[in-house]
Image 1 (cartoon, rainbow, N blue to C red):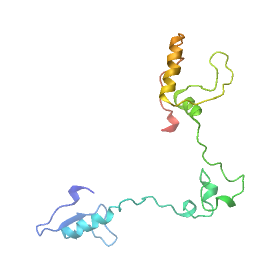
Image 2 (image 1 turned 90 degrees about the horizontal axis):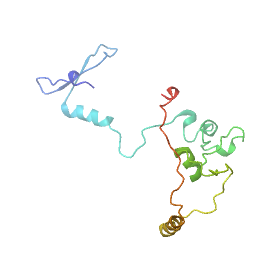
Image 3 (image 1 turned 120 degrees about the vertical axis):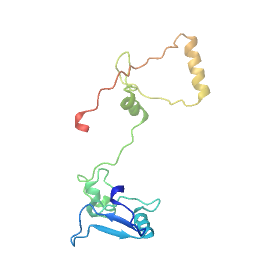
Image 4 (image 1 turned 30 degrees about the vertical axis):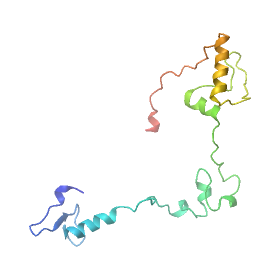
Length: 159
């Protein structure tokens, strides 16, 4: 809405000039100030309400929704044939997240290239400090680091 198309008349009414005339030729709408505010307030959505409504096969209870949504969600998800349904989202474990985000290959040995297996996940700060102190005593204070390097520009196909 443009302020130039919204002048006040001498009588105190709000004149709203339409962008394009109605079929009957109406170009302006005259409203009392409270009526104008009421029409504007009607456009404001209620709080905590979803603004996106899905219809057709994307509606929540549509019979074919499970066949077309990426995660196979829908009320009829169990009735789809196995080849139609797509697998549900599988969460990445922390090792795969490290590889994906930082480029750190935690499951491959840096020396020989062999496959490593996680045998423990140590999360207690006191125990971590004891292990690091022991490594410092043995002269192993430098931990191997992966070079992250600069990130390339975004692909043109994604824009």
